[in-house]
Length: 285
Image (cartoon, rainbow, N blue to C red; front, side, top):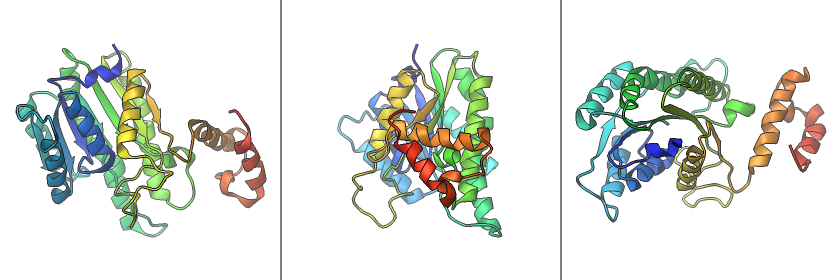
């Protein structure tokens, strides 16, 4: 059966970073399929607004719970509480989405920057897997189950300017790939969601209107569902400015730095700029 069958009435989802953006969009997708949801975020006020947007939607079934929990995913103790809450309220978790992340900027010598990024973006995922993998695997004995981990294109193409964020998302990619391998003979599917330019609280800055080039969070959720319907692990989302073909060229160029023994990050080096642009302009990968 396709991985998208996890979106089923009676099943339960736990989603981190669910108070807004992509996490909330996937929560609404779950609700549209009759799923119970637990929205997890560290922003209590935004969580209340998110819950209200779901509960207040047309057709909401009060018999199918939509719960919230304020939690810091970087703290193991928070995850112990989430496990107790989820299993008590729902009995099982069929869909685990590890989506919480921060996008702070900094550079070398800024220890707080590195700590904050890695504790949330990387260990938030590690803590979630270590806590809920047994719960999801137990649920998989009777229902389709899935684990979705949100990565970033910056963890693949590694553009200069934000070393901790890029490294955290590169590590998340590696973790997701290993988890998929380790669960290859089970009925739990694993998916790495890599959004393109998406209009969310992390990316909007001071803008109140979505730029033409960006996708909405709902578009990302729909794209994720389609890829899960096709049983894909890598969910590399395009946007209105960047096509899937362009993403592939950029990723291949990045790997080419290793294979062709070029210096790292040549796509942004002046001496390689012309060749990189010519490669990006080719009509096919």
